[in-house]
Amino acid sequence: MDLAFVLVKSVIGHEMEVMNAILKIDGVKEVMGTFGQYDIFVKVQSGKKGETEKIITKQIRQVPNVISTTTLPAIPGQN
Image (tube, rainbow, N blue to C red; front, side, top):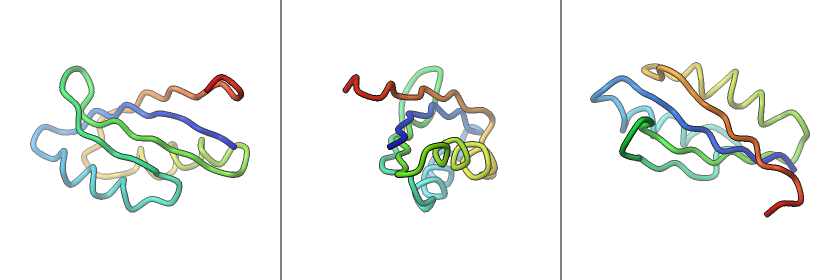
């Protein structure tokens, strides 16, 4: 099972619409607003190897008003 945490920067004032759009994506388990360098914290999980990468690159990064993402892939067996 693939698991990753994604830190998202969005256009100022569009955080809620970005969060709502990301939450609709299959494989997204949690979305939270944050303070600091990043605006949104996203938990992505998939049952297929490599699917998490596709969710991030083909869907999350394509959401309007997403400026950038930083992905933290979880290490299997270290949870």
